Image (cartoon, rainbow, N blue to C red; front, side, top):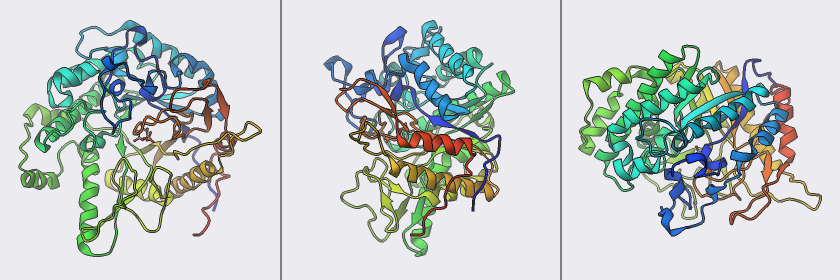
Length: 469
Ligand code: BGP
């Protein structure tokens, strides 16, 4: 079956400031949590004083090379581009009263450039980083004071860019705070569950307050949440496994439930009781949470399997998020299970649950690419991956799911969030830089570049059904 995606469907790519910009102290930028993570978001933290190499200090130098990169996005036919604003460029320490004008001016230039090419920005307010000062001196979101700092930051960027940015996302993969609390939330690693969930509560209130501000200040704009859509299947039909899978899915759906419905779901009451957690939720918090998002956005890379009877984790699995092994699926070189149909499942699950439009803001294959003797990168594996996933997006649209758009992760090679590698490449555009920082930073179109360009131009009509396996 072939289908044509709606004319209004937004096609593009997604990035995060700390994985592309570099220039980590340029124009008054403060250090962020990502600047002390040379080994990636799951790796060891390092004080900057030791002078350690951090590949993200330069990343792919998007900070200076953005005109050329946006030109390439335009050639691809992008109608949207997802980027994040580095909070620490706007408020270098996070608790200042006045923003850093040079930081604000930088994103003016980016939005000018996007406008020139008719590309709609989709902007994440905080993508796996916050000013380091807020983590070090306030313990991140464990501290209620951060809600006010974040509100000030959101207000500042809404005021400055509101006339040109119509799609906003609050926190990237907000549910990941449960698994890695420092990177995005500044919460000390190893914090107990009480501290962790209280921090998450503050973050959810801050998200709702940003939504409220956006609705008041920018009535034309839409604002969504952002979750890692990591579905767990039951490994067997044993009711205990089915129940366990439901519970594990609630671990991430909980965030969408609060952000979309405006209150804590009842299953959390029992969970908190069992864990001995008692949250400080004020009457004002309850009011604030009622301001709900306009759409659901999510990333999708893999699915996992759970069983209460068998250990589903294999010893060799090198996965950031421990997703149990599914015997029917193959994995990427980094142990992420490839499951195109899972994307259709997630789309249906989220739409059934929330009845709000969805935005698929991340999906892609991290792989090692080789330049052949003709200087080309023949990444057929990436074409296959993207085809199979986009085909399932087409199926979900046929299922009646409302989907605003699709932005592939890292349309241009960038630094991996979980491992800080350059060699884990996602792009349809190659960047000449290796894990040690060697390379010219030259951009080269991969074979997948023309393929993606054609998919966008044909509105998905040339996608092919997955081969039967
Ligand atoms: C998501 C993050 C991104 C991105 C992507 C790929 O979890 O939102 O920042 O990096 O995963 O992950 P990685 O870079 O670890 O391969």
